Amino acid sequence: MENVRPDLTVDFAGITLKNPVMTASGTFGSGMEYSEYVDLSRLGAVVTKGVSSTPWAGNPTPRVAEVPSGMLNAIGLQNPGVETFIERDLAFLSKEDVVVGVNVCGHSREEYLEVVEALAGQERVDFLEINISCPNVKQGALAFGQDPKEVEAITKAIKEKAKVPVVMKLTPNVTSIAEIAKAAEAGGADGISLINTLTGMKVDVERQSFLLANKTGGMSGPAVHPIAVRMVYEAANAVSLPIIGMGGITTWQDAVEMMLVGATAVSVGTANFMNPTATVDIIEGIEDYLSRHGIASVKDIIGRVKE
Ligand SMILES: Cc1cc2nc3c(=O)[nH]c(=O)nc-3n(C[C@H](O)[C@H](O)[C@H](O)COP(=O)(O)O)c2cc1C
Image (cartoon, rainbow, N blue to C red; front, side, top):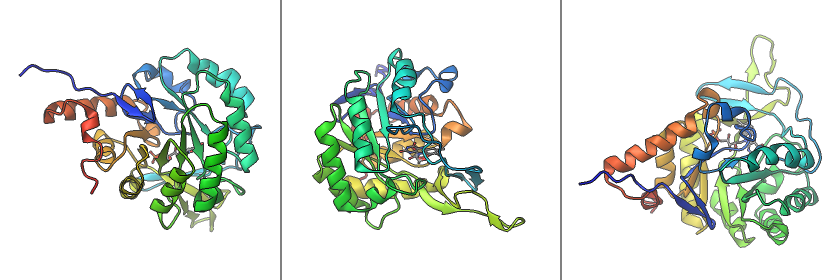
């Protein structure tokens, strides 16, 4: 049999991606720094760091800590605000041949809508990922993501203003991820992404104090992967929306696992800090896997282990 290269393209909420591998928000900036190591045009999409309507300073330091097989962060969504984001980050990404997802954050429904409106005229924004799940800001964000009524209402409000597909990013810090996923679907979301970080804490026993100035932080990295797989599986069985699966994806096996349980695409986060070329390594690994199994298209593995 001839060696035909497998088709890696996927359709996500009406957008054709070259392959299913994206960058997870907050772990890849806007791609500028990483472009020294990674040809951005090889990626399925770049998803940017969360952007708010005005600049946010983030939380006091220390705000990251290493833990076994993962990390805790309490950055607090530090960002320069949407105006600078458009002038600097989006201008940079506009020159790259890559799908661009912009991650949006806010303290209130109005703040989210301000960012969505500011981005509505920007041609290089292909989709929005709405972070209703960050555990590191005191007001807003996580509170929205934990209440199904709020999830539905904020999704609906954003859908009225947005000009591109809207992906709601869900928190794992809930009892029923299926219920939250259904609320996003009821609000008219075009897709969902999960998981954001799990709330954790670390104490410095010598100093007898919290390691992070914020006391709690969001846990990410390989240790959270099995939790993320379980949650993507539950969400995939609850809704018919396309899903971006993430949480601890470090190897191509982790990415394939996410797709088998129902993710259409995946995002690679903390792994970028350990290996700046993790995304392209994972794309190559998926391609080899499909070839080895004689699978013609990566679309064919989506949801194969779902029921
Ligand atoms: C340092 C850091 C910053 C992050 N910033 C954001 C952010 O701005 N917006 C967001 O939605 N998620 C943010 N996240 C969450 C990641 O996008 C991802 O959902 C989470 O880390 C799980 O994936 P991972 O284990 O592959 O990192 C951040 C994660 C880390 C580690």
